[in-house]
Amino acid sequence: MPDNANRIVSTILEGLPFTVIAAVGGIALTIVLSLAAGLALLSRSRAVRVIARVYVEGLRGTSEVVQLFWLYFALPALVGLQLVPLYAGILVLGLNHGAYGAEIVRGAVRAVPRSQVEGALALSFTPAQRMRRVVLPQAFVEMLPPFGNLFIQLLKSTALLSFIQVTEIVQRGEQLRPTHGADLPFIYVVELLLYLVLALVITAVMRLLERAACRRIGREPVRNRFLGGVG
Amino acid sequence: MSNQSDPPMIRFDNVVKRFGDNTVLDGFTCRMAPGEFVTLIGPSGSGKTTILRLVMTLERVTDGLIEIDGSPLSHMHRGGKLVPADEKHLAGVRTRIGMVFQQFNLFPNMTVLRNITEAPVRVLGLTPAEADERARDLLDLVGLADKADEHPSRLSGGQQQRVAIARALAMRPDVLLLDEVTSALDPELVAGVLGLLGHIADTTDITFLCVTHEMGFARDVSDRVLMFDHGRVIEDAPPERLFTDPREERTREFLQAVVGRT
Ligand SMILES: Nc1ncnc2c1ncn2[C@@H]1O[C@H](COP(=O)(O)OP(=O)(O)O)[C@@H](O)[C@H]1O
Ligand SMILES: [Mg+2]
Image (cartoon, rainbow over all chains, first blue to last red; front, side, top):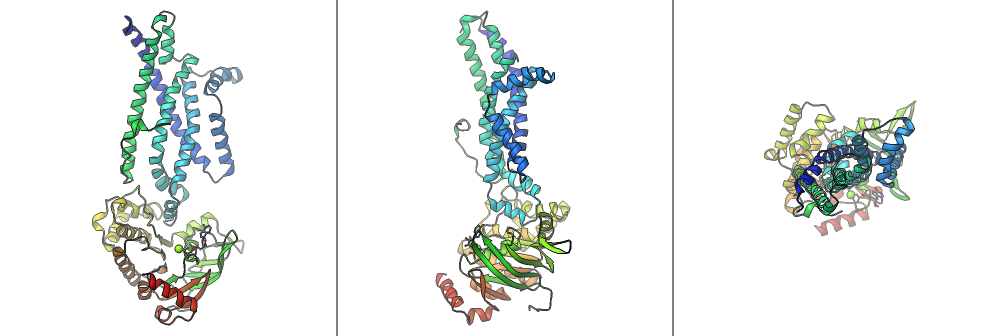
């Protein structure tokens, strides 16, 4: 460990709140967009489905970094709207991961057995009530593990925000480069460990949610799944 | 029992149902009087479930008309003409019909009580207290008063089916559709569920349309039995006649095969 380890760690830690805010904000936006776009992909209206499909394919199929640059550098030039870097970052993280999340929501909703919908229909629930009261609560359980993976990917993507000068942990590390060139291995190990800790927090929270959700529908939770599975 | 001059509770008028080029029902015509218990029997694939699903509006007719209590179910009046029903019309008539499924279809995300109260509250607009009282009375009726707060998954198949029956009754339907409701049950649980249904049939004026392979039950509770084959009714008679003296060769063969199996 280098002599100035304390100084390096404390400098990088100053970036932690930005990383956390970006991740939490991005996750919140991801959840909203995933639900909206996922349900839109299942809409009866063709127009709604097409719009959702364009969003999903458009954001999944293009580079996250370029999306970020576009929002942060091109938008001001086009319409004179300069976003705060952190907000631009949260927006891109949410938009991008929401596109993946939409497919998770769609898949989980479609995995709910048709017989459940028919049971609800035989009780005269409206289409909205069938979705809200019967299908989504059951689909929710299926969504949690893939959403856990998605949130961890989102967390790691917050490092991209260093490109637009958000002072999150990677940006803080880069600021140390000119003066601490010899300590680069240590700097990056600290950064990696911070991501790992945050990822473990996300995993733990998701597993708690999954347990509670399983219990609610009277199902045994899946146990011993190491770190929420791979993906 | 079935007085032909009464307006029927259910009327099928030349109902045709096709899936692609598979014609499942080919001009099905039939009336069921209010309070009548009608059982459909016949070989697998003959279209019995399809009839129930048409009445529950889970399927749409290809041609023909279904009426409930004198008003069209499959169709609606618009500009003096009958046109295929839209979702809004179906939502209006559906509340008069209930269905119990072979696989129960209870909602695993709700307790037993909630399974029964949810639709009366959300669809019929009962207060939670009213729905709760109604549900507990029904749980009493089906012998599960102590299971109100359980998860459906903690119950036996027979108990789950009793809950499903209570859930359907909580909507106070005029018509109750039963599709092989004991086929998924362990043999020792069948008699209890059938006994319960017989009791409900005796003590309510609900019109029953029932598909079953339990011939003893069909004979005890039915007012009429329809023998189906290839989407057509080949025999329509009171149970005492149909089971003891079937007129059609196909009916005789079918009854022998079913009795031989059980
Ligand atoms: N959703 C569907 N799509 C295509 N074919 C169907 C569908 N539902 C039923 N069928 C066909 O209709 C016929 C009658 O089925 P069904 O009404 O379930 O018969 P039963 O209940 O008398 O065994 C069968 O040939 C079946 O394959
Ligand atoms: Mg069937």
